[in-house]
Image 1 (cartoon, one colour):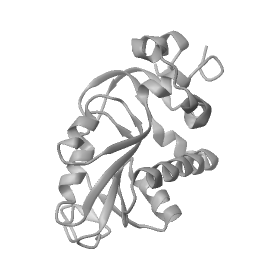
Image 2 (cartoon, rainbow, N blue to C red; image 1 turned 60 degrees about the vertical axis):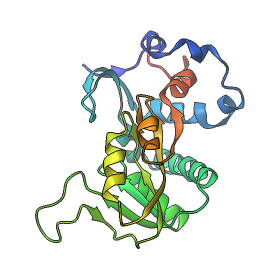
Image 3 (tube, one colour; image 1 turned 90 degrees about the horizontal axis):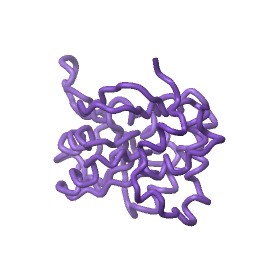
Length: 211
């Protein structure tokens, strides 16, 4: 049976280095994002198999944020602020199918950029393309997903974009800190997240956790 993470379960996921203060970051959007995720019951506890194939005792179902307009809009605003701060120039926002597509779509519209997305597998009908949106050759693009774990989905998207656009960075809402950043660095791509899972858990407190 799935349920929100209880306080003791969150504590068990924290590493010792989380005893360090997050400083000004805690005063920013960390608690706000944690509150949004809690209100949409998007942090779940149970036994899960992730898209990477790894097993986990917690799951971030950030698709739940999409059903609430104010939550969706606010997270998009935070993503827009983050991406403009981290990446100087990009022409196209590329979503990773399927969870990254609504975030890439919202960002592209909000920032006045082109939109594309990378299919999880090549379709067997029509044009049989793996990438939809036809970014112009030579254009700069960022790749967007909701959560990064090992980085395999982002890596597949980056490979699919070879020859179509220059991937200047990758953006996710939460980085689970299980190797994605290192994996993308091997391709010369910087991974940026609104929060790491450790930062997110640090910002959960009694008011945001189910008792």
